[in-house]
Image (cartoon, rainbow over all chains, first blue to last red):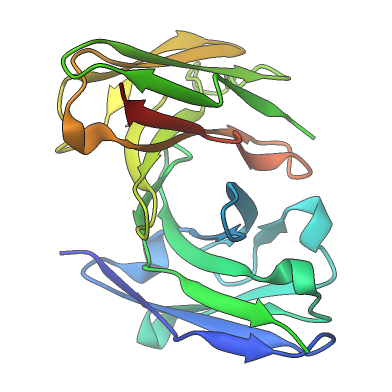
Length: 118
Length: 116
């Protein structure tokens, strides 16, 4: 069965960077897009971007361009999201999710809480 | 940017009654390449990641009870729960996809569904 395991919670100071990992199993990682979505405390869902199976093609939401970088390691079926120049409003749970050909997100990780605080 | 607006923000419905949630997109989500609406619905319970319920506006994901139904096309969509069960208490989100890279994916603000 499809499983997704994300890295543990992080606490960072403003201006620092964070890198979240998303390890998958139970399907052919190299055939699917991986999306990143975040959710600030008590707030709704915000799409960050997606990375394509070839590891080269990516698309970021406008507000994250220049600060977010999505990468993938096909050999260990793991995707990564790095966010730089962290601010307090980046405090959120960051989810990875598998993208489908129907442009929906069908399997989600459990989420990684990133707290930005001095 | 494409804006997704859900209505209402919150909703209280009696057990066994019908619940209806609306979602309006600022631009059409009908794809001219496959004639499908790239509109999905998710359910999120506290402390859990979202769960995909509906894709292509009206196709139920495998394992989703048939009391959940999606409808609509273009810019206006509806999620209907035909007979509310206690386990349906959650926040529901719609999500669109536009193939223009600068537009990408967008979620609605969410609708909180409770028992009356």
